[in-house]
Length: 167
Image (cartoon, rainbow, N blue to C red; front, side, top):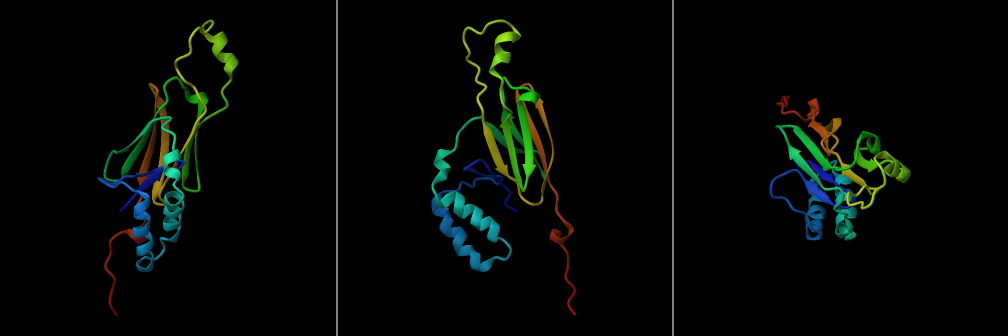
């Protein structure tokens, strides 16, 4: 089973050794006649890979996607200098988005005195991941500058292995 997450324009696959390029688009199109119910997935790959948008992806904030168990994953986003009130995590229509809330610049000046040099960035960002239909987002925790979002693949009954009676 291929479980894929992708950022604003970047595809990251949760299988070992899979790297997608625009050349792979023809492979997906050649699979269309042999598959049922994957039209949305093929359309998403086509729109991502077909327009060359993968090169415009920002590297900020950096993130990891880990497989933490047979059906468990975690997305780790490095958010040094941010706290819970600065960041929001939203999940809608299989899109998980991590973004900054509106930052108030005047708070920085009054917290612990005047800032002479600001080297820790707190810029605005939004990073999105597309989550498969059978993956559930269980929660998020921000600890020591690392936002960890727990995900779990739930295999529905109709996808579990079963024997079909022959009549």
